[in-house]
Length: 288
Image (cartoon, rainbow, N blue to C red; front, side):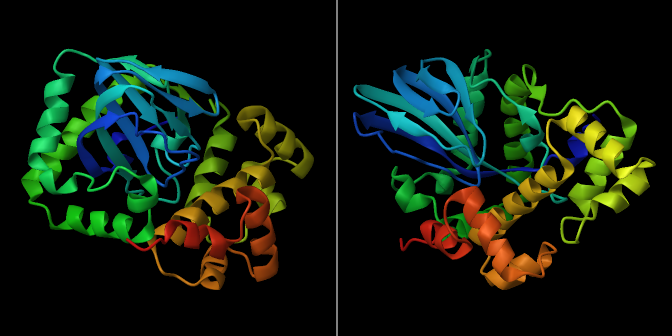
């Protein structure tokens, strides 16, 4: 699978140093941005779908966007936090195409890089550590606007630091779908770039030069998912992001993703997330 750094656009939403006294115990956190931590003192734990991990000093930790997780802290604990938003230039991001290690040993100089990121972005420090306070529509939009207004030199330096820190994880990351068949690679690119349209499996198969049944078998062998499951997953991820980053009406979001049956869109969204699109937006649109 081909990856281009030209398509990787990372923004610093929040950055700062947090000192906790057994008060870092937030449950069931799931955000449209990724989190990167540098631990300086003490220990804590984070519960992820893959298990419970102990956070240790002089290590970096990465939690991808939309990953459900909880924090467990029963002793003094200090860490630098960086909230990373991928400004996607197409309908899917580069970061989401990899499986990352949760923990890597910090390289020499990483702490200075994190401190520098804090120094040039003092206004991006969280005012409250509670995700229920900062993880919402208003704060996300406000931080994105702050990013737009920053001096160009700060944007360049901040992005460079994020690239360096993310490279620590990318060095040990593995592609989620190591697709080697050129026909399926082209199909995935077509899907990513046409999420706003109805995507017909027979037409995708014809474009790939295969019969429908053979196409479905090859696609699943290469990606681990059926074409329909892959398309639905990508469309719903796009819907979730649109719900929390814009005020677009839900029926308009459905239409923009190629769903002309609004009721069907509501049903599959609820089946995937456990709540309706309106409930999902409301859960992220809390008053500050």
